[in-house]
Image 1 (cartoon, rainbow, N blue to C red):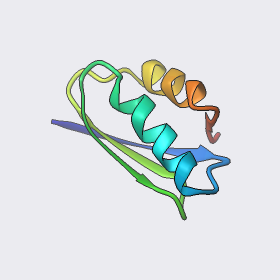
Image 2: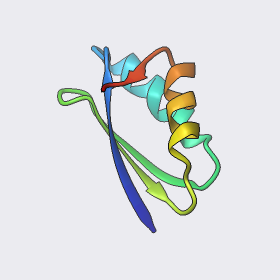
Image 3: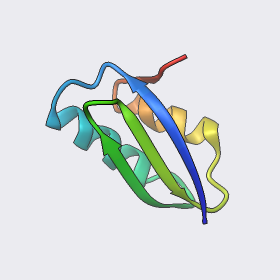
Image 4: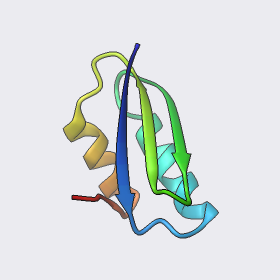
Length: 67
């Protein structure tokens, strides 16, 4: 199982964390999503997960991957 880590800008509360987790969990191939609110890190585990799909899911939640 592949693991990728993204940094998400703008998350500030438990609702933010939950929104990102729920959207990313719906991406094809995702088996596990861990969100660390204090650091803004989102760890995604699964096979065949596309970065663009994760970025789109994060955008759907109202956030973006930090540059």
